[in-house]
Image (tube, rainbow, N blue to C red; front, side, top):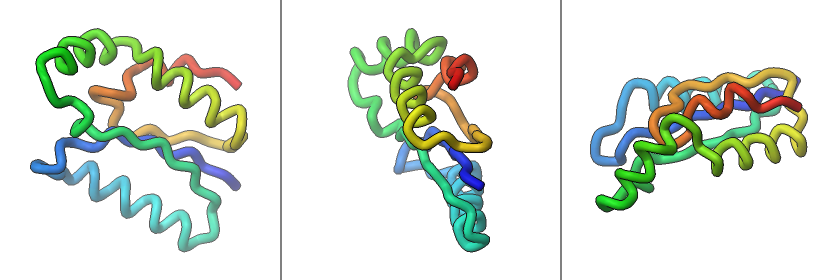
Length: 99
């Protein structure tokens, strides 16, 4: 079985329980010999005022993430996908990726 796990990490300066759960799930699945494909974004990518404005728009629909996840699914052909935290950089756009 192959699982696509996706997570948007919080700022490095304020790690969260969600971040820990995601890392633990990756580790648990791999320890059970499940093939894990990861898609990760980090809110550390948001640095200045222009990034904040762009992120506000992209939080509704991220063209970048849609394209990256579409390509990843086509390449890896996972059996299932589990999205942990999609805010702010992943966005609901991944819900419409079809393979």
